Image 1 (cartoon, rainbow, N blue to C red):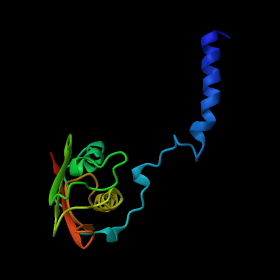
Image 2 (image 1 turned 90 degrees about the horizontal axis):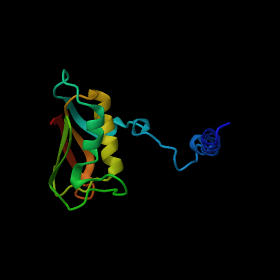
Image 3 (image 1 turned 180 degrees about the horizontal axis):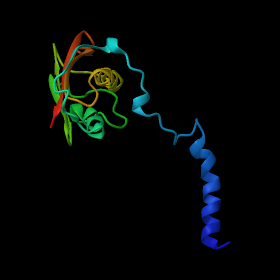
Image 4 (image 1 turned 135 degrees about the horizontal axis):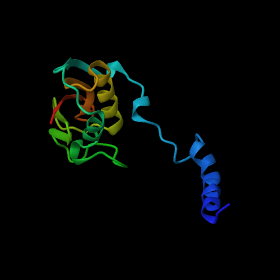
Length: 146
């Protein structure tokens, strides 16, 4: 066996158990597997059912609200009354019904998942239960074509 092939075989045998381990830090839990709670939203309307936005763009826009809630950031920062998140074909606009938006990443992801369960990758308007004024108020949101 050639040295390069031998090295590649050795490396693959070392990493295969790690990559397949359910407890591995490299194991990823896709957002699509997040349970959908239809009670996390209210008043959902599919505003343009004949339009399909790119799913990846929606997912990136979802994390682009409040300047960015990607990575380790777990909650909207800066106390805005309105915020947008945009990527490619997708744009979210959020507006607090009262006070300021302080929505957590988890709540926001659940609200979007519930709305998308009804409308798919199409533009929509909905209201997330909680997420403003320390969860005493709701957050209206719109997903539209950018």
